[in-house]
Length: 246
Length: 252
Image (cartoon, rainbow over all chains, first blue to last red; front, side, top):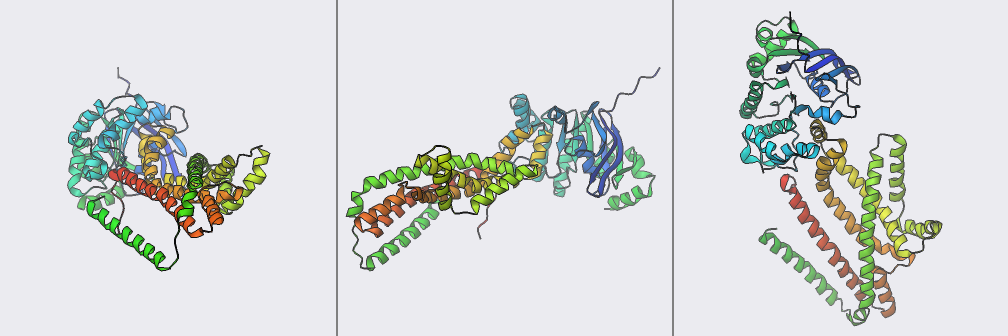
């Protein structure tokens, strides 16, 4: 007797998204299991961001559907705000609220949506190593610190999955490490993560699965070792030879 | 403001004022402020009308202006066009003409004959066209990523506007809104067209009664500055305090 496999936490079913004449995503299928860390790699414009944004209802697919914990993610549904809070989104450019302090950024959504106090927000800032910066405005934080606050903010609504849209691409090289450390920590705690990234080292070390995208399609997917060492497609090989050489 | 900056500003102001006074004295005109002093009560009444009309018109302009801004950012073309039409008509005609039409054309239809009320609402409706543009530009100047971050956290559209967009947009709107308030203080003088005696009308009357036009005007000019300069200073202070969290602004 076999135990039926658990349903995927995040499921994309033939998701297509076009911008005018450009097809950003074309019939993409992807499952992410609970506790799984999936890293999306691929050149700029390959559809990684659009895929993540569809999961968070920031983009609306033209066709296909996105399921989160079995529920259909659709910007038109009445309880979309609740469903959105189920995923924590981390943006390339942080998008911190400049008029709020670090603690204000983290505590805003729990306070407004759930009427919660700041205790959890403080604990989250401590978790990302920034309890001493609680009352500082984003303007006075380094890029790495900003992104760590942004991660704490995304965790504040206790999401069932975290989405990272190139979280280290806008950072100075010496600040990449501190952000990746926080992400590694999250992965170790069993957080389900979908990450668009150019950090191949991180993918190799932390990802359960690597997905290579190009031109709005998933070209190949597999364990990091397999994809990096033995890519099956020429396109993957060409991409990897460029980014790994650097 | 640092003390040194304050001293520099005070010094320059006094120097310019002294030059003007000296020039006026050198003109050999014999100043006589005694007659204007006798009309101090009329000036006082004018001051109250100016203050009341400006404050009320500003409030009306705010409320209507937000409405105009929301019309103009609507997704529906007919709604958007209504907003555009309003702004075009108001901005394309002089207020002097508008207030005359309001008082002699629109007010009788509504059975209103209170000059102050009609004039003030006309001024507010006039200001709304400009303030609507200030609101719209302020809202549209906020990065899309701010709303995306707010919505991704589960905030509703209204919550995102209220807690993320407006506080940031408001900061950017303070300078143009102050400009509008100062402009209104002066534009309220056009309410004389429907017979309202505010500060400027009071000064004209004093001039006509005493033939001391220059003194009457100098007095009223000083009164306007007493109203508008503190407004500027207050706005600057407020702007600086709100800006603490943002490092912006350049000196050229």
